[in-house]
Length: 445
Image (cartoon, rainbow, N blue to C red):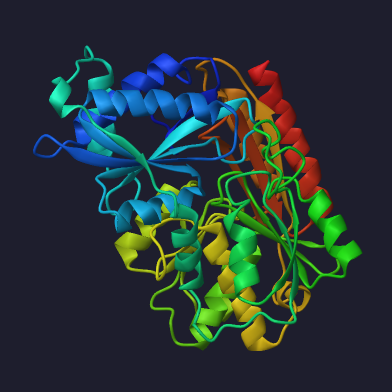
């Protein structure tokens, strides 16, 4: 069934524009409370990132949940994967994250986790959508939900992250620069690595409600590159606003993306005989990653773009590792969802085990040139199915002569068509991507 509100990663949009409004959030809180009620009561956690609108939406959701008879546990600013973890450990019926991930402050959104710390089943999302279209009611006064705050949430999550590496782990002698994107990891991420012995230099950790993801974080790594070189650090780690994406920078300032980090983790697990099965990537994963894993005899499959599809494929196959080139990496042996801090820990630990630098590890395989161009569109039209776009795709594919691939897809979180061309000739790949993007832009105009 098609969804009216939920996209591939919850509900997201521009603050003040329906449905990212206080009145909708009130109703959404009520609908969620009604959907999760068991024997008349339920308990739901709420976490958020650092954007200013989080205060407003937190209050609205809390009121709606209370009206449905749901007790609320408030976490404050907390990474998305921390909410998944704490939802499990508090045996809550659900967790809610108020975040628009890597988007600017003027966007916001809602993500849900089940009591198991996983994305909601389709039937629960559909139940919430159905309730949103029904009149809101309020339980009897004696049945209203109560709200309380978990004051030690950050400490609990820090200990959980540290538990993903052996207790003997010691990062002494390692100098790291950590970019928290002025987002939800600003308190916990530096402490995790400091408590494991690393020397940590922190940037992007002064959130003011408006600067989340602004020229910092995993989607804007320029400041991190500069800081790593200036500080003489061993490597840099960049998180996004809600802490489920990670990118790295080696000591020379070169960016290391999610595909490369996934390869480091996968080969480390294989060497320690802890990789049953293989690795799940996406349609956007670099062809070079697939070929490199093949040489190591590590199976690789592609899921649709989006961590929920990666996780679904991992669960179906019983595989422990998956991720996206954007930096969503799921280490299922440790957690139930993409967790940037835990993924970063696995990479750093693998480097220490091998006695290798990040620069040396990123040269272990050859990335095929891949050009991605975003084309903005408006309205409900589907530019990808337009005959002119389809003809252009066929033309580009034919001219690559079987030495590359073309992918067009609509973003699940923004009104963008992502045009990707990949092949073995960088000049040709860029030229063909620009040509194809121009056709898409003309159709979208």
